[in-house]
Length: 313
Image 1 (tube, rainbow, N blue to C red):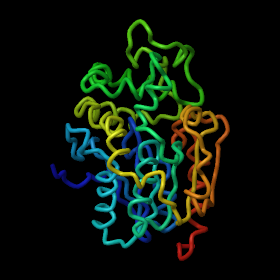
Image 2: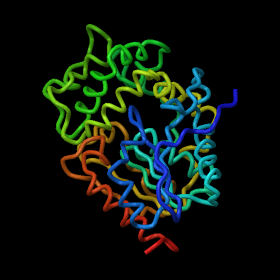
Image 3: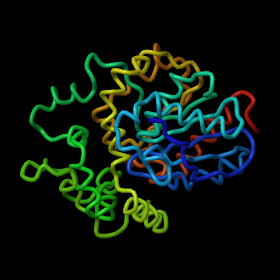
């Protein structure tokens, strides 16, 4: 199956191309705080909807979401704007895609920044198979997401409640009871995510309503298929976690990001990362770093970009 090009959510400015890749369950609007400062610094900022989101293609087959195909979709975006190279910046699944694009297409990535998800060395087993060994009968969301249709229905039953619960539970200031007990009785991820009484302060009401309306229209299968492609990617793309990255690299995460509790950062250096120029943990911040700490994130990005050769002043 051949899918079409990614839909573009943000396209502003002129100058060197910077591509911003969102994560799950987010949209290009998650970068809303960074766009104008980057444009003001002389960059052309483009943020697509990832495969499976919004008006981008949403194939049902998880095999259409393996890292080689997703990385090719990013290269197509770079081609679309007539650029030889771009700086690629990604958060969450966008970070995983940034690592993959840089390893698979090093000639197209001038520099890269990953947020929340560090690079990891290739495991001895496919990642979900390894997680099943580690977790046993214990609930873990990535394993739960593997069964087609199950999590899809849970999340789509009330997108507003799921998004509120997800953003709140994995922020730096989670509501009481969030992710506090395994849903042994229900086996449902959403039961770990009690929606906060109010919209978390870091969420913009208009952007949040856009997200609710978008996921009410599209559902969550596209986003979940990124998880379902993890083991196929391991089998199909052995270059990931083995290919050194030689371009300038930055890493940024919230100090309280739960992803860092189960994803080690020890590979943020040789032999996989040759030129790490930024490694930042933002105090008091959870998973949604560019939204929870917009000023710190923007300053870190501008500092990183400003240190690149031949970048704008």
